[in-house]
Image 1 (cartoon, rainbow, N blue to C red):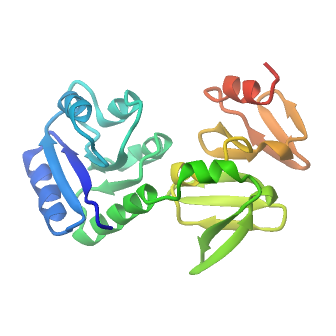
Image 2: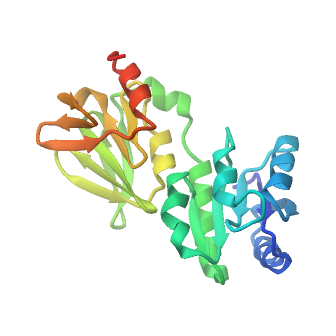
Image 3: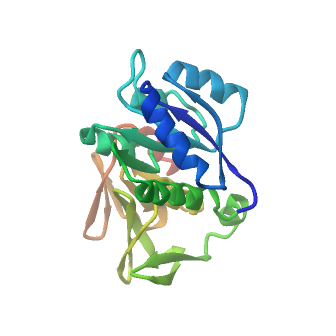
Length: 235
């Protein structure tokens, strides 16, 4: 990658910031544009300059990392760096790229950065939206598999993986849910839950807070229900 990823480090512990800065200095594709000790400082920085990758602590004064992410309209790729493993599920709910538990190794840091790079270097979305009948290549078990979008029933977030269920088989691919969603045509697919994206053309019945596709039931999340109903013309 010829263009460097602009990084912002946010942590109220100076030593923790220094460790991430040191790790970043070993990777030529990363450029640390700033480092700060609070989410409020980070918010100011994000409004003044572009940031591709945010290394973010969770337990910080005034505004914690998770709450801060929820205030962002156009979030960069986020790698949480924290000593608290119990927030992992919530972190991925806000589309975190990865979750590093302190103290983390340089090797683990590289893995997280590579995930962020993979999410940023994605095909042109305008091209993806223009051809709903195209095929999508998904990595699984060391192979690249071609999947026809028309065959996909739904996709489910599973940590740093996505389970893709088609009319023919089920594929688990090492990809973040947000990155996978970005590769789907919005005219054909919609998120109905924080962990589920469905193919609208496969929906047979909508009953209460669930979508039914033949013998498959998918929950409709409260935060997604209104938009989903609008998308299908039911509201």
